[in-house]
Length: 531
View 1: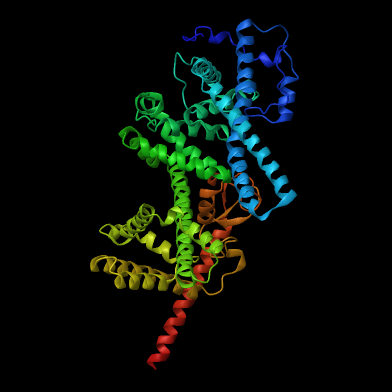
View 2: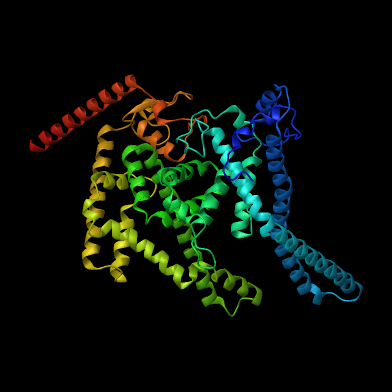
């Protein structure tokens, strides 16, 4: 292996266009669709590939076809063996309900299932033995390292890596030769590292797999040794410079992948938690908030969305647990053994474990402390007004109910309860002012109404593709979680919207006229009262 990378520049990226020994027409490409890939590879280059290029690409394909297939089969066995075992348990439990020939047939089926499980276990053990064999894993990892260095060299604008570190962000668009390489050039690396780390590979997109590798690499091994990436993450200047932004960026990107995003975002949050002790990473986060405000705000907005989602699910689960507990206490004698077992099993969920309940309660107390504790006076007027204008969830009686519960169960001290009551009063006052303003304006003309929120637009803008007029604040909030036009799903950035100057002038004029009319009416009413 060329460990010093002296011959890496001999690898020709045009291999697949110069009489290759491999056929990649059916392979997914790194960043190209099927049609563009066919067009790209239809332009062949004359001549033959050199030996080093031939060996490199054949090795990459061999790892994909050989180790990749073995890992895929192992994934299937990891899923299938527990399912077969559960199926066997169900059949054996049902054996008492059969007799005669039916029992004999059932017994033969049980034996067949046991044989299948034994074969699957043996196959799984043999695959693990091959894939974890150090004599195979060590040279494979060295080759994968070489492969990733070559790929970084391809996308580096100067093509000097690893002699010089690449400059980020990388130039756009990426090289066409890189875009049309087979996806397994990166995917194989992710699968192998994931397997070696946890012996249980999971399917994921390429970036998700890279996040998983970092996640596994920052945690201590089962033997108490530091993770295999800890030294690199805290000591490499390139990683220190770019990791935080990359994690935040992918946290935003993964929003469109619903079934993957929760796992990926959990891993990203744990990575940030592990690197948070390094002041250089904290400084990078502060730098993002100061110099890249739109990016930082979107990251925080999605983070808050996830916290709200998890908290909502947790509270819903606690409500279900409370209902099941009441059912068991009231009707335990009337329930059949099977039904009672199901309900008790449901209650054994992690949410009722003391350590989880205490963590959930602590989280709720922390958020309440932020609202009513010593720092509550620093809550800006904008925050109070935002609570008042939350038409979906704000109700004044909710604050009143919360105060009653806190007093009844002595959950907070008098000072904190008084602070919460003061916050509730500030919000109620803000709500009253908003309502008075709406009454003063009266019925809003339809052309002045925001199409999503049905409120008066203050800063109307035109969306470039759908040509719909909407309030700037409304579309900014929408784009925090979905970077698409809400009316035709076309990609959209806030910089692309066009101010509707003419409509804003109409709205401002109408508001002034309505408020002037309201003042005249109130003056007239006072004069009538005086006479």
